[in-house]
Length: 193
Image (cartoon, rainbow, N blue to C red):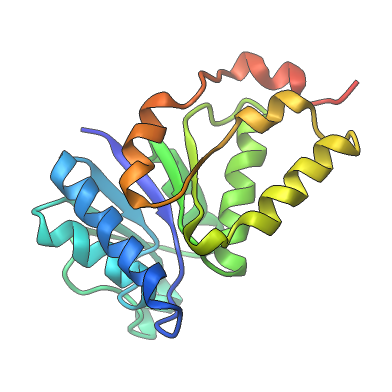
């Protein structure tokens, strides 16, 4: 059984397209029999993702820091809820459990998680697919920034192969399957020479 770690937001005030995409991704992962691993939240895209997967009989694992649990931010109907001490432990457990990483639109926490996964892949510490779901062209500025980093020689052109971009949730599984191969040997591109 594959595990897909999904980075996404907890805000319930975002555009309905984002929430619908999160629900749809959860449904797709549930239908495929893949486990959804995510931040454990109960509202916003997080809640929609979990509810979508659970509605299709999918397995959903949440990873929630204890302080968020104490604030009752967690989803109450998950297959498994892993309580961790802090955000660092949360990120580590989420990526360690991943056969692929998917980033839905989100805020600074989602950006941090996505960029950490990209950094780990660049250093050969994580060699699995990274999929950026670009609903409403949300990630266009981020993708342009990454391309600029290559143009300015902070990254190698090969690094543009570390992630794939999906226009919507329905493309995610295909993008995972079609992701370019990567290995820890690719860390030789980590240093731009």
